[in-house]
Length: 37
Image (cartoon, rainbow, N blue to C red):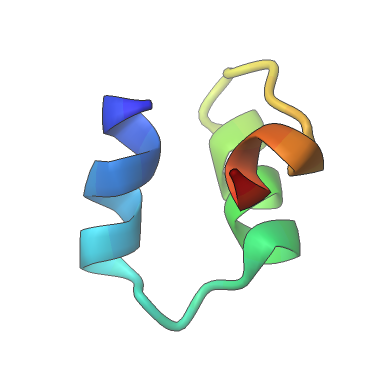
C-alpha cells in the first residue's frame, strides 16, 4: 500500500490502469481493484 501511495505522489496523473501497469512492470503482482481502493 505504501508503494502505491509513493507512486501516486510521484505521478498523480496516473489512473488505476496506468498505475497497475507501472507496478506490474516493477515486479509487483497487483490487480486493478487493489489500486483503485
